[in-house]
Amino acid sequence: MADDLLLLTPSHEPPPGFASRTLARMTPSPPQPRRRPTRRALRRTAGRRPWVARVAVAAAVAAALALGAGAVYQGTSGDRRLADSYRAVLAQGHGSFFVAAPLRSPAGTLGSVFGYQGQPSWLFATLNQPTAQPEHYEVQLVTRDGRHLSLGGTVLGGTHRT
Image (cartoon, rainbow, N blue to C red):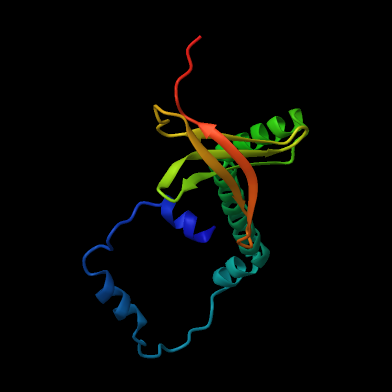
């Protein structure tokens, strides 16, 4: 989150002479003779409250955290809406899983296949460019462990007029 907060600030180069002034302040100065504090100075320092600085730092940290959380919440609102929609669609069909994958043949990618695990479960395939003549295909399911399961054959392509 700290890296994301840095992206919110505009980037600027330091002013000319910044490095030399900083180094000059870092060199030790000759010791000054100690003076006794005056009564007025003692009254000013006695009135200071050390907890005020701690409270101010805590408030600044809390404000930065709230700002960061708000930015993350706002930035991910589209993803949350999509997830809610996806859950609603799955709940409507009593489903638990939906997947899409490329439909491949030895000649290359033919289209897409969609699978749904619900009540009822189904597979749906689309072709990128259906052929003019019907073609017979042997359908195989390739599992994650590399096994090929035969699902039978089908005829795809051609035209049908009624």
